[in-house]
Length: 245
Ligand code: NAP
Image 1 (cartoon, rainbow, N blue to C red):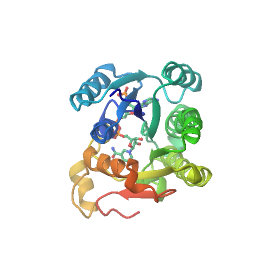
Image 2 (image 1 turned 90 degrees about the vertical axis):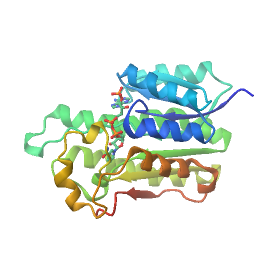
Image 3 (image 1 turned 60 degrees about the horizontal axis):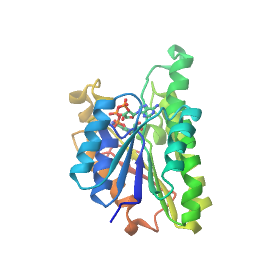
């Protein structure tokens, strides 16, 4: 049987996104792996998806660039009308920390445009076919920072808080079409994004005394993407080892 049910994971080349791609492949989805520049990593993820006997496609586009999203993702959708994107994981994100007085306009724009505008740019394309199909799962990767606010991360906290608001609003718009929209708010997860942090010091404030793994986040995403999670929508689910949220 040809696979026609797909999951699109933005920032699927590395870290949490890669683990989510593998989880969704395990649940029976073909996977579209979006990435911004790291082709080798995206190809590795695609190969790992194929090892799970699911088709994988890599799509290179900057989620922050609306024109590029329309051209590349829109182009893929246009030429693959037989395929349906049932699951969208808005996972692409960047950190670019600075205290506000020292923050450059570029630092603000880059972080907001990747997470918040990126979520808009991609969801806008995917939502109409989902509505027509009367089924869908949207999962937005946010952060503890978007819930409690983190000093040094005014940009990142604002981007993730914006995504949380959009998650709650969109969930109410599309619930009657069997589309759920939820957000996952990780604490500290061991990936490239946290590689520069002082893990030994930071684990002291985490009740579980360790960073989480990308696979643990992917397990939660897998559940939210499953049919079993049909009645969970508009929620922000924390996964943070007990860190205050
Ligand atoms: P990561 O290891 O740094 O990976 C980031 C991924 O996003 C890569 O696949 C990267 O693609 C992609 N990406 C970045 N900018 C992009 C853009 N403009 N367009 C398309 N793709 C882009 O990050 P991670 O730790 O897995 O984080 C994944 C998500 O979880 C992010 O939204 C992050 O904010 C959130 N999160 C992470 C943590 C944590 O502790 N790690 C905690 C809370 C929330 P390339 O490989 O091509 O560069």
